[in-house]
Image (cartoon, rainbow, N blue to C red; front, side):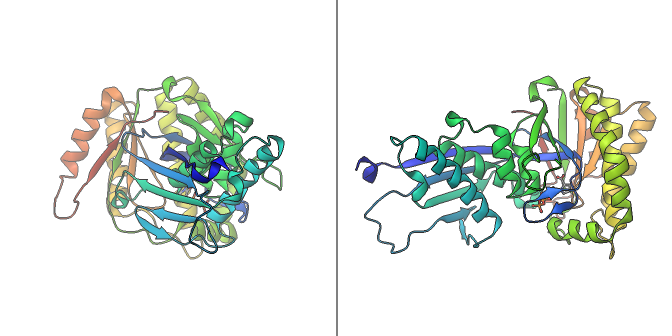
Amino acid sequence: SASQDTVYQATCTAPVNIAVVKYWGKRDTSLILPTNSSLSVTLSQDHLRSLTTARCITSSTSTSTSPRDRLWLNGDEEDINEGGRTARCLAEMRSLRQKIEADNSSLPKLSSHPLHIASENNFPTAAGLASSASGLSALIATLARLYDLEAHGVSQSDLSRIARQGSGSACRSMFGGYVAWEQGERADGADSVAVEVAPASHWPDLHALILVVSDKKKGTPSTAGMQRTVATSALLQHRIKHVVPERMDRISRAIRERDFDQFALETMADSNQFHAVCLDTVPPIFYLNDVSRAVIQLVTELNRASGRAVAAYTYDAGPNAVLYVQEKDVKLVLDVVLQYFPQSAASFPDPFATGVAPTG
Ligand code: 2P0
């Protein structure tokens, strides 16, 4: 057959996203269904992205007796655990391809061959940024291209549903710009998908500054931390019922209207509440450190003295700050930050990585 000597290969990239309304809590840990909707800004791929290549091994002369899927992350081979998240994503993608092959007998039977996948990030792990979102998103985008799924009616939202099962926040990296992950109501997760709130071109004036406060690995992994919060925090129940739904509406409107003051207000309030929920967990989870808190005070004082929102801070499951800033204020904010936190080569080898947000 012709496929014997044909190499099927695809390469895609996917961006990092930083949530302004935080995802924290699952109602279904297996399907990765969240307890609340979330919303993120996609960062430019010039600075931060995952790049993934997938190859379908169709050779009939393979020396391996039981050919299997293989995965390399930043050059090192990783196990694909049976029943794990990666295995699940691969199975979902194969099953979509299988349906298309069943309806189009002329298509090569890629779904029955093993995959070799290599993925790398263009940002150092020292940046302290979660790479699971861009990594899992790049995996799904690459397999979708290899399997030619979009030409056969599979949408970005369909793909986000699969990326979600790799890592919750990954579903939001399937789009550029401003992206909501709608929590959905169904038990099977069919309506728990990412949707575009606005494309990157809608508000290109917004920049993200990443302040690396510490390059140490965080204490409590997100997956375990959020389950402890679901099990123990009364504040989380208040947040998901009475805070997030209205905040999703207000911040979506602020983005549509390019209202930076409102965007900043909601972003900082949501970061604060996420970390309050962590503190309300038993035993408590601490992600912010003294430097994180000093940055919060500095931004608060800068905004107060300016009589308007100049910068909006947000923190994920670690001490590093992301500041959202309008283009006209980038220089001012960097100057002020560097004045109060002079770079010290000894303690911070690469203290400031700046990303321009957002782009598709
Ligand atoms: C977010 N974080 O919305 C929140 C804010 C961290 C703080 O999504 O278990 O790696 O793989 O679904 O997506 C980190 O959690 O967790 C996260 P899993 P994930 O960006």
